[in-house]
Length: 192
Image (cartoon, rainbow, N blue to C red):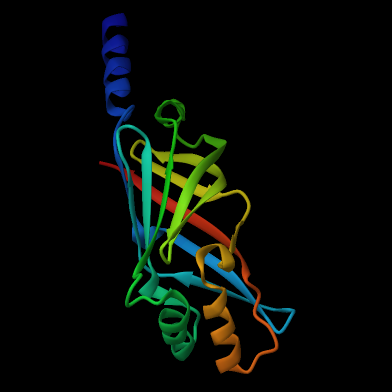
């Protein structure tokens, strides 16, 4: 009986990925941001196409397809692609960071752990260091969910986008559009 229990325990340990690589499930992930115009009118937008991975060393890379911006208004999507992001020259943004693979392997199914990780955002030809406060949850033997605990505030000026924001403000006839944008995310990963 002890031998059977030991074999079952050994098989369970082998089935749990300890240093596996992970792939982002773009269809079950979202990255959203809030824009504020005319001083106090806030709107939620998102990007529809995300890709990414975590390698065996814990290095994380998330690619955001800027042409997938979704504001709910097609002409505004087009203007943001052309006048703000300049997707003809910069079609994507890339987030890089790293995670402690030991932390991932120690999480039991259904268990969560908070972490603060440093990383970088490469956007519009500029790379800026950022800190992400996240909650990581093991959803299954081969699933992870990474959620922002609080929004990350991105400044358009840091990425050379302030002029684009002003162009959008002018064409829309608005008195103001904020250059500080809160960003939140829910990222679903599957073990490879």
